Image (cartoon, protein in one colour):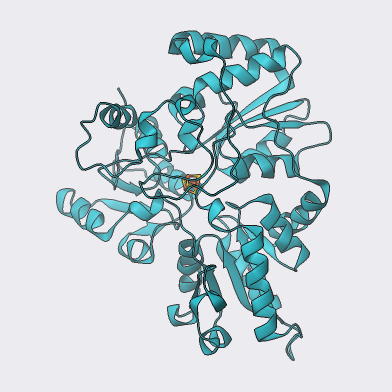
Length: 422
Ligand code: SF4
């Protein structure tokens, strides 16, 4: 049994003493009408109005794992090039084994473009990823999310209404006129992990999208055009990136959407270089400096690499920080047997450990909570949507309205055009 399956089993049998993983993980995804929201930890709040997955037919709920794998393989073989299955790095192994491409959200959206004959893109990730794939899809391609309850708690922390309210308050404070250098008062920057509506907002307001791989390049682009940046939804990626670029944390106020002026006084906002939205990833916020200290004590010489969605103190204490792609490449590039302590989602860490047996690779967090919303893509849902495609039916299609998609595409294209300096 893998360590993820072991953790889930312990939660299910009530023997996971001290675990702070959400109990949702112990249930099969179809045992509760789950919407988006909870990530990895207890206490994550489910947003109202979040889409919910309807029932999964009994034949998929009762099927054995082996039967589901056989049915998925058979459906894929029948569909051939008409379907492409995408699996995110954080997805469970039972699903990833059926993926034609494995990667981060942006790599996967692009990978789908290399299969132009695919009429259906089955995205085994979370909702915002499927939206991005739909925005970038060719005409006639349909994007399918096998379980509609697979959302992202971070993406849910910034909604369009709250961002528009924030924007109105900032316009009131800063005005809308550019300074003598032609820089507008604020440039909105959204992380890829956000709804299509927010990508559209950025496209419409002179802003841009970033990934964890290119956040620094994108912030440079934004500072050339704006006096300051409004960064959402992940405060940690924004703070860690801007800090590395020399922006003092004292000039990065946090914007709490539930408070007037985000909970700040006007003076702090006037002095701000980066306004950070009060969002975070439930998985990456679990990593701590104490875990790094423990890893260093138990494994002298260990190389600690964490994702920039981790809190500032964790990134500062690590040897390096970078995107999932950076982490993978760093491990692959190590020529000598090395001990790595990795601060990112456990499914990816386990897969790295299996792929690079010459190294010792472990997750910094000994409690090991997987991303619980990603975990809702069970092989039963994958078999269900694939067999429907064989019958000529499209289930769980994700579509982004044309006007939103047009603006979002503008923000994504700006991101692609923003190249690192030098
Ligand atoms: S790992 Fe975090 S950011 Fe990624 S999908 Fe899960 S909750 Fe969202």
